[in-house]
Length: 145
Image (cartoon, rainbow, N blue to C red; front, side, top):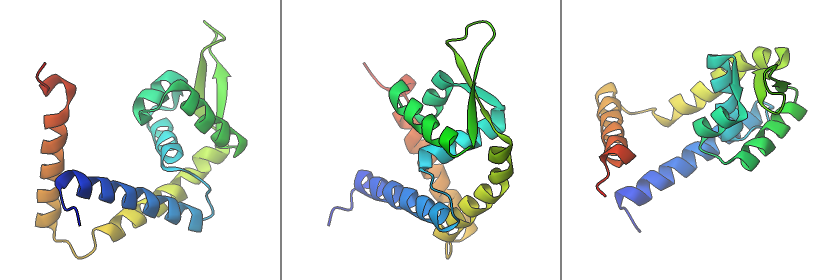
């Protein structure tokens, strides 16, 4: 069994995604992790362009468009043309999207909290420091040419 750091990080990522999606589905929400992240970002910023959403979820424009189509069909977001350039769409939460967020947030937090059951605060803090260090080492500004 491969226990390299890269493999374990990958496996943890896959398991976390599956756990979150499962918890959302059990709560009656047919959402992907990316769709959940979009909703959380819209809660924080009120409105974002499709380009800004793509940057935040790390997806290309066609993928973002498909994610937004699903969220729009679910009645959680709407696209609004900007007055300056009607080709640019601003994405906003609908009333239904805003109303769903407290329950969605509660479900997501409960799913994440269950992952860390049995881990002490000191272990959690050390884990977070290690992850932050790994991320900082991999940031483009730290890479050597």
